[in-house]
Image (cartoon, rainbow, N blue to C red; front, side, top):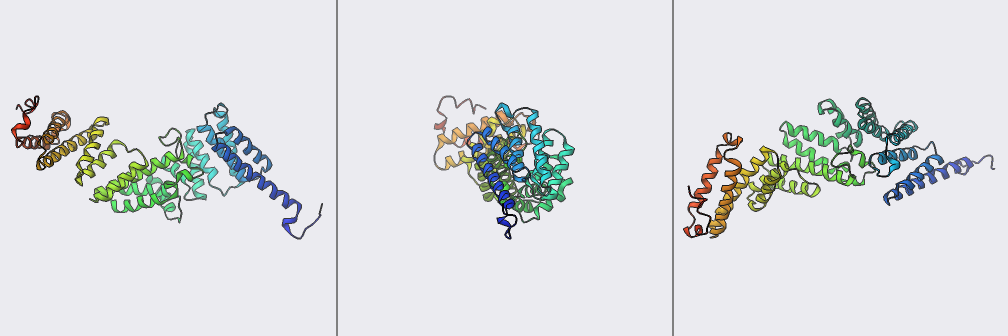
Length: 387
């Protein structure tokens, strides 16, 4: 009952406030451990208790709001399902935003909430508010790029890229994609390199709110680690494409390798990777990739490109086999190349566009004509060269 103390930290009210604060922080830490251990219901109770202990504490209120939002999107328990629980998450985020109007994260999550609800006008307003408070906010930055074309938000991306920050990778990636689209690959390379150095791109799994970088239902929305793999993989692949167009094939090959380590490349990127290996003379590696694209691709241009390049690989490998005296292997590769050209290139819709298909077929037959007659003794080969 000391009425007055000269030292502020000895005043009873200050001591009580400090005690409540540390208890509140402790409850949040316990909740994180429980959530990581697979006990979301217990984690929610600790977070609720933290808010009750310190109703005016922004961190406690935001922790509960972000938890509720996360569980409404990805929680498997029945208690977290339904629109009512999601609305509770929004109300909690609104409370956090009112407790501290200088923090960007509540507005960024509210923007994501409205975007999911297809209220794009409010979503854009919340994202804009978040970026006004924190120009490099990775949630708001990615969100606003989903809602608006780059031309309309270019100033926001440039502002974020000019900040001395480690979480503005989203801005550098957008600028790099724009520069690459207009053929400025040198500048695009610099942008992509800077993107890959940023924490919000390279270390999403360590970002507390990394799970909210994407919309639910995206390929990468199952977890922050997969998000990192997808975004990094796409960035590495885009960087590799820039190197390839500039004729820097060794650098392109390394970039494609890094892209494949971070995520699964789509078939067009896989085909581009194989083209780089073809340019470098890595025929065996390239042919394996072209075969995969040819088997799995539904895109006519991609299949066509893979077929032509694979037949070219077969021709080059066959010539190498002839130089090494491996005539049987050379014949096998030539037969495979002829079959590919006949099946996928000659007589297709693209045939009138690429007249070099006949030239490639002629080269395959010409290479076969110089093989020793003994290699054609195997039954079944005569019909291939009957014409």
